[in-house]
Length: 445
Image (cartoon, rainbow, N blue to C red; front, top):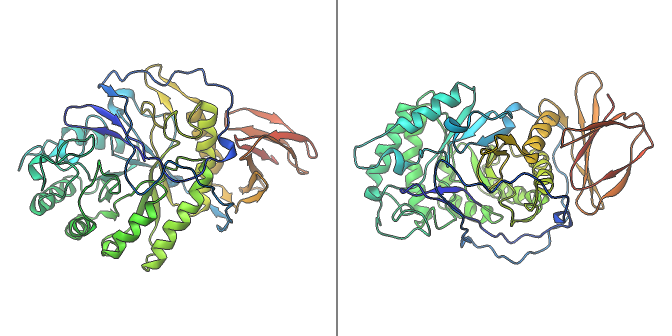
């Protein structure tokens, strides 16, 4: 569920929700990573704290059922991969590719409270710099609304569980309309996507009602559409995201959305994304919204205390499996959190300026997937497998095990094996290879 949360004092807070899902056998140990990813942020103070959100979840794991594949083979578009950047104007642009960037938790801050610190006062420099830098790298942008300024809050002194007082309560409606008008007018033609709130089922971000959010959505929808923008629903977090979305849709929220969003914080092995996406799709169908795209606008394995977050090999395995399964279940854009965020889904160490093992895994899986046709996965015991094809007769299989490593017999005609650590080796049909938690790609060319 987590984001780097910035208060008005610049302090960063890591928050984590423990979701009621199982820890699969693949969450077991592997070799330790040697790179230290817990260095302190040189740009801002870091408060290493976590808070379990009250979002209808439990810290007691329950079993995850074996999923049934449903997707047909389709070509993976380049815009499937998205990213969060913590401090792009200080650490430089990432060495990995992505097509869309979500602005949430960027530093210096670009939340409502940062850009509109008092009534009628707008300070756009932080967002101007971010937008100009990102557009120079040809990515699309998603701006996420959140953090009500105290002056605009309906409860300015109300506690927000670690965030600034008043920031999680419903705003004055005129202040909301004014901010939405100002920001969408300023960035017309530059920011295309507008997400109506961050994680409203976490009480540090929202303590208002669904009716209040729907009223805000109604006002914002017309303003955003008039500026040529695309409207995303608020994005709930965790394995109960569908429960919140059901209530929001029941309150009328579906009328004011072009795209449905959620956050896959699973507190589990990555296969737990499968029932979550199924549940989100069921909610869309219930309200006649199956035609709307489904975007997962924030996710990662979490931090080192979460299942498969303990070392970089586990993290790499989580990322690779999650990305391909999300796509095969029909998620149309997937936003990793984050590139250089300390202790939370970290792909790049901004102190050593080195890409980490999971960052390499991201790069490799991107190359395996983009432009390829990926057919439905199959499951045999603990072994997952999906077929990948390209032009000119290229065929490949992506294979991993959710349990202990297993012996896998290479089919006839396959000659090369690639790993998410960017290693490759020659293989032959009939050869036995070991397949574990980290996916491998076996190819016929």
